[in-house]
Length: 231
View 1 (cartoon, rainbow, N blue to C red):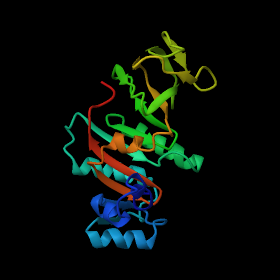
View 2: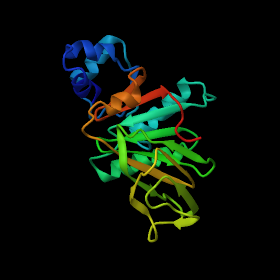
View 3: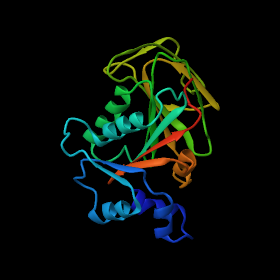
View 4: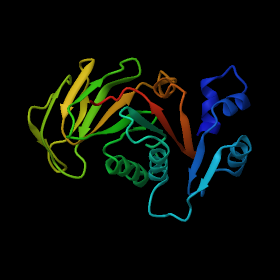
């Protein structure tokens, strides 16, 4: 994805220069689908190639999140990981990536696609989400995952919840609408909000392009230091 898609953000620059400018720090995964020419290109540039094909019990996203945790000081309070291309395509892959963000609840991991983003909101925090209306919204959803989310209360939505229990086979707050610049809530939920396709640079804005990138074929994992969205 970095190799093929990143030059599109800089149409007036030479694609090769862009690929060299935003060189991944490491490529880690099963290596079963990445193209040989892409792997060779980044190997020449000095990118670390970490073959984890022996591990078939975890996904590539899980491997990369673990790698970032090992690289960085675990006490960083404002670490945010953006995983682009983590949604779309096969449903089992999507669910595998959602499972990853549930397995690392202390970390803010945001899954991105062309259409939306997803993040976990643990009930251990009161969440205040600042809506960037130029690149996201208004469609949103709150989805319980794993277990029922009891006594969910929200503000800033068209259809707010007031100490409401949500569960699969019961109430799930999909097809909601953001009405204010700040949305608040507290419960164990997945938060999802639409991204505005007309703004092709939205992911570029979100990642700030100052980060270390890890990739394996169809998605990119980006580790950045940013203000945490949920406090």
